[in-house]
Image (cartoon, rainbow, N blue to C red):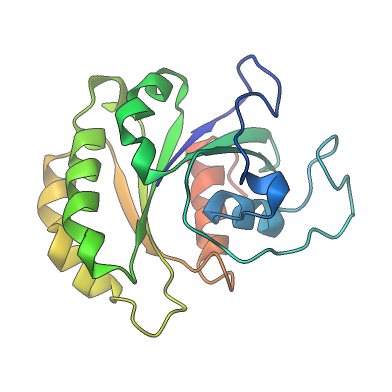
Length: 193
C-alpha cells in the first residue's frame, strides 16, 4: 500500500470519502499502528489520553486518514495497493511517502516492485523522501530484510532514485519497527527529537 504524509491537512473533512472497512470500522494498517505509537491527537476519536484498542491488521483496501502528532500535527493518507491507478492524484499534496510491502507474501513481490518503481519515477515525487516498509515480519513465513532488498534490487533502486529512499522492517501487529518509522517521520517532516 502507499502512504502519503502531509504536514497539514488540505481541505475536506476527516471522514470524507471513506468506505466501509476504514479505520473507524475496526481496520488497522501501519499508519494507524504508528498513530497508536505516537499517542492520541486532540480532537480525534478517542481524545487525549484515551486508550485506543488495537484491532487486527487486515489487507488495505480503500483509503484511511490518520492524524499523528510528531509533535507537529501530520495527516497520513493510507491507500491500498489495488488503488494504484489513483495514487498519482495524491502526489501533489505529499510531503513524505511510505511504501508498504507485505514481506510475508512472496507472490506479490514483483507487482510491489513495479509499483514502487512507478512511484519513484513520478515527476511530482522527484524530491519527496520515501520510506519503504517491509511489513508483517511477525509472521513465520516473512522474508528477511536482506531477502526483500535482494528481490527488489534495492541497491540499484536507491542509486537511481532522485529522492532519498530508506528501508525498514515493521510489524503493524506487534509494533516492531514503529519507533523507527516515527523517528523517520519526525526527521523528514522537520520535527527531529
